[in-house]
Length: 134
Image (cartoon, rainbow, N blue to C red; front, side, top):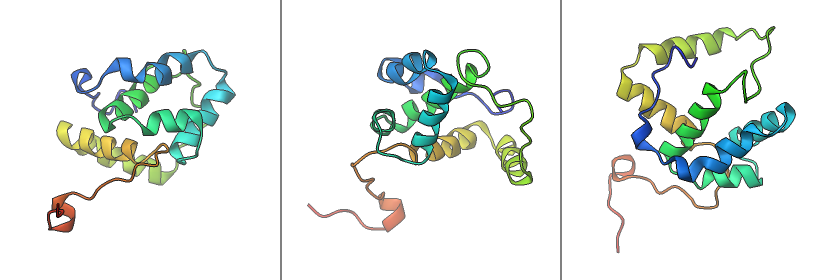
């Protein structure tokens, strides 16, 4: 996927804010890395999922991008015998067809719906059609 999906603009995120989720993650075992990724995807109440959930959407996307860049080196790789489902292949095919900005927006939206945070997302004016009252 890393070669077929447009990389995010590095200036849109702050590497200093993501360092524990990137650099420290590289020192963990494959099993620990998988557990952390699964916990973040599932929004579990864990230390790493909290750290991830507290990041901005651009920084969350940077975490996944950095992990993807190191897969097979510093990050656990996809098993050699892994076979993507037809649904996965179709989804990736659709993402590849999107323009750069659309890819980034979609992937940022996906990344921002992961992790654990007790802060609840506020609906935008576009979503609800009204402005919040003071």
